[in-house]
Length: 418
View 1 (cartoon, rainbow, N blue to C red):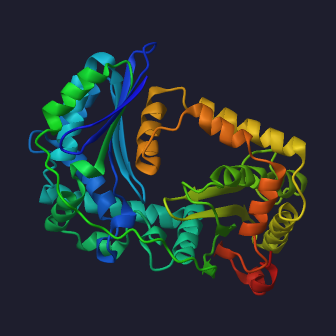
View 2: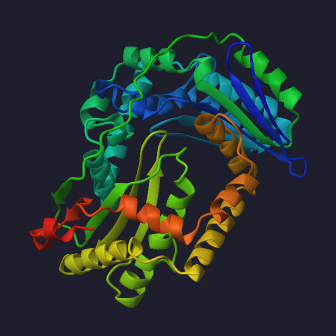
View 3: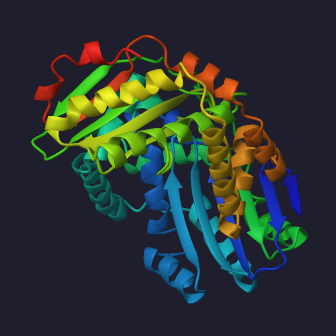
């Protein structure tokens, strides 16, 4: 049973009771991410996510870790471009303990200056790690070029320059503006009673006061640029992309089917043609990244420099084919069954159910029943896929990024016409 309640101070609470398990997964979700940062604050949401675990007014960093370990709990946190999450999974009997711990972390971080300097070094190393992970780097460069001069185009981690100049006062300012009741969603799923959970939240969150925190959430401008970065490495990492339906768009399920058909499975067109039939890559795949008001469809491949041109030609041939000829009934059936199976398997645990409750609330303002999702996938037709492919993959340059030895790409612009 799923229940939703909004507390007097504006805090949104969602629960799903799963009486046949012993675990409870709980998450505190912040409806702010890196897209809500000014340029000079780039990376500050992620920095705060790190810092809240480094000590609160009541607990040291060591105490936080020890208390969670003592109850056998699993915890994690992450920041995205539109939200941040602090969550844990414990046995039902330990729910009061973990709520006391999570609420303390999110409401009372100390932002100790010495810990800040240590964590700054950690995040700078994280930025270096992305720069040395060339498939990640290719996607980062692609996104920056695709949505230029917009927060959605910037890295969640921020830049070396922005991370290097953050001071305690900067973190406190952003924290006070963002971590307010109307920006928080608390979700829980597992062996719990809604009323008992609400009582726990009153104990920890009633003192949190409603505050206004305006922000700019204008959509990004798309630029289909070609951006290449020379690196003396063994492979060339390629990303081609175009626009895609945003999170609430009516065609979003058609987009998922289209992406899966192209490169979402081992039986997909790109995987079969480029890897299985030609042996030109180890990794090739497609995916959709979507936000409230924007999205993109990307295709990634990593290949040897001598095979770059052939791989690009094969990708472009499949893009032209999918917007020219209807997919077969067998392909469509296989793809929809794969998507529905993945959705159902992904919701078998309390952690995934807890996360879905929060995400649906933040994006749609309501819980979407699984039956509705499966029906929307099932309703996708051959004509839907063909129409969307024709709309997205226009007869123009696609956006493109390459990282590696780039001499084979001298006449690239002539190749990327879909």
